[in-house]
Image 1 (cartoon, rainbow, N blue to C red):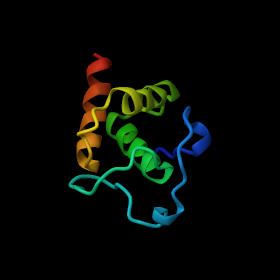
Image 2: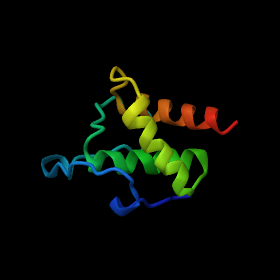
Image 3: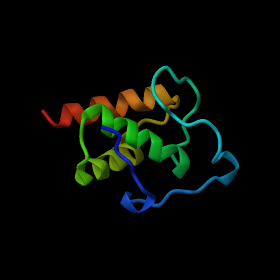
Length: 96
């Protein structure tokens, strides 16, 4: 599907950590590197991957993804692949 998310599409504001902006971002599993849930440059590729995985371009689902990540995702979920799995599973469970 290849959804493209812009910063203006997001409900919450995230830090723009310029020192890591050019680092490789999440493109799919496996990816055991740590995920920074406060960095815009990490958050956007993650949300794009999750939205592609669930096959949605719905802005309301994107907003729910943000709420899940910020308010419900446990702190011990730290790797990129674990974040991806968690977000996909929660969104799929809620859409049943």
